Image 1: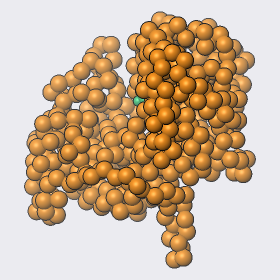
Image 2 (image 1 turned 180 degrees about the horizontal axis):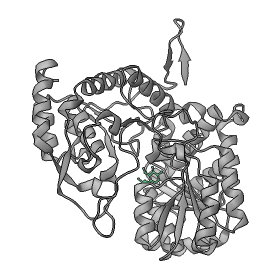
Image 3 (image 1 turned 30 degrees about the vertical axis):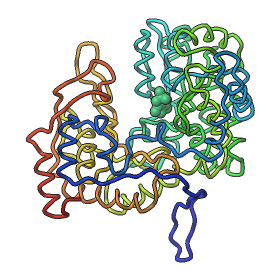
Image 4 (image 1 turned 90 degrees about the horizontal axis):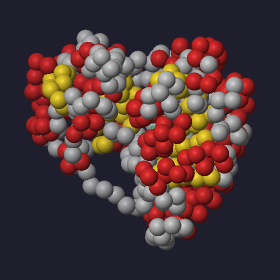
Length: 480
Ligand SMILES: Cc1ncc(COP(=O)(O)O)c(C=O)c1O
């Protein structure tokens, strides 16, 4: 929650206390340079021992609650018919109001099953925006991902409160152009990750459903960041200001045919599931679950995580849990804006996103602007961020580069993990880097995997800029 102090200043305030901690250390810049070079200027290649503050992702890195940890101790490891599954089923029924639940080992496994069962070669899958794994699975199944976001979605310096909205007219046009029979479903992603954690409004979701229903197109809802989207709806959509997070979630779910999530985000565990009230969908997906994931009552998840997920789903409807990352992101973004660092506005739900094109206007996309910035941020601070730009888009079938709509460097805020002083440290070092941005140049690939290249790709710094940046840092700031 956000709290106004007696001096008028507003700060995000924790509504929990920390009782288990993990030690971290800040290694000197010479070590950071070595780690970066060994890891091919890819922050995915870094080891925890070399990272001071890990803002790579909020996925599976959130602090769990005492009740989640306690639930893990009473899990039932039965291969079939495990009692933990029935607790998850009850939580899904209460929180999301779905009858049928198929657990999977993580979000992309849900996407794999949906692609396997519903996406055929030549199909078109419209969505408010893609996520990396979503696109990979739907394209591997022979489909085409059609992003129909509003024009405002790509404006990183915006005041539009719902940049995750789907463009209704473009949806109508797509149905006319491709035909409803070529559209296996429409996908709406809550708190749209790659647009900078931007929500859609409930009004927009209702409009999408109306058109989809008119054409018998099922609505698939990616709810990995569902509680954050509900929190934004409460804050930003007047009609829902007095509604609880739970009530907003219920209202969204009334519109949904198939729901899936990565449990690693809003529900603070590791795992995922698909849920529906439609027996036909359940029966179509169920046979494939043991083939790719595991038996119905564990679906590739550890039963401990299933127990923790049942608790996490209920806890995410607490307004202070739903808003825990959002409010820190808001503070983080505000502090960087005060220091003239270009960040995505309005601030989103899972991370503070730096607009790398504005930060490094001299580094072209062909030299991977946001990848270069992620590497430079690590070098200048020991803080690990993630490239969300052209490196995160694989080449097309002809091998040509696909330039990303946005070049974002994502500083994720895992829920209930970092403190305000740690955020202030990141603000300080990113600001220093911005003041020395000319030292940062581009990157080029030295090893490039064919799919999801951002995970394992290795790059090098053009003109060896990392060494020069480290030299200036040491002279002005010292070893740390
Ligand atoms: C919106 C969204 N969908 C799907 C996924 C994939 O989930 P997972 O990483 O659990 O496979 C993610 C992961 O970050 C996500 O943010």
